[in-house]
Image (cartoon, rainbow, N blue to C red; front, side):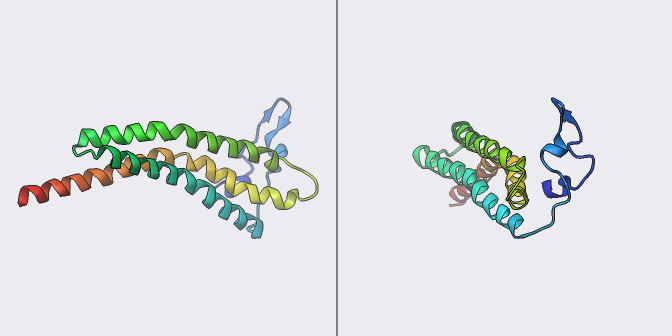
Length: 156
């Protein structure tokens, strides 16, 4: 998405402190190259870490508490989500801040580094959504599992 937006003339066409954002971030059409694909591979590695951290902690909370009702499941998911959202947001923020100098770099090597950083930066901004979707999906899965277990107990 960000690669497509970079090629659009209207995207980030404003000035901040006298510096045009399109000029600062060298926004022009980006061709898919090996550098872009390396950026995607880096993104997949970085973005999946947040989900793994969240899922691991959710699993630990469910093993420790073993909630059975909907309200207990919801409570456990909210607790786990609140405890892990801050560390995940901090790592995402530091990654995004670290990519800003790369995105605005000029000179030798910038023609390779900028296209490599674009997928990582754009994907990390969207990956923040997974921090909120992951607990919801986990809750749905555990809720259905509890309902199925309850139905089996009633049937027998």
